[in-house]
Image (tube, rainbow, N blue to C red; front, side):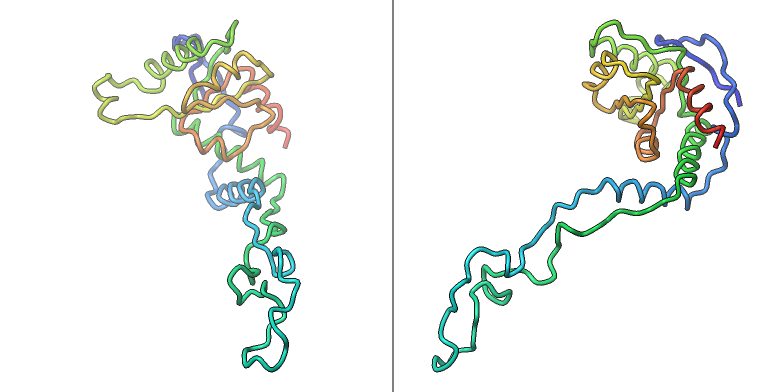
Length: 225
């Protein structure tokens, strides 16, 4: 599978042969769904927490004596049947939402997501990404050039009719604070280190931008699996 390579200005500078074992994997929707569900469940924070009658403040004194009042016996004003009392069967912070998934299955799902981007034409290869300074204006110029010349080739009138929102994910092969800071201020653009590649972010964004070096590292990492 061959794909064009562009520079930061959106100009074609060559071709790149993609490894079919990495970017030509057959899609298995069930496996992709399982990997996405597992990642999102493992990232889930357990925030909801209700208190039982033993955790609610107060209620130490018996409301009234056991017999002789004509009322039902009560041992604490913090019983679940009282207003202001504890909660029965409410959500607890010790609940475990994690899901296990085989490492090879997880890696396979990532390859399927990458293959889908390449097959659908939403994968863009750049020869390199360079930003001497962490300037958001310069980063926006690069993304805009790619949108006008590579990602969306329609006229401005057609673009306005479709109202296409920017949705771009960029994987950087090595840590670069200038690129990360400059792209971090752009709405609809996410820059991640290649070590943090994951299926949820790949599927979340419409367009995926990789450099030639990033593709080589991906192919070296996953072609051995």
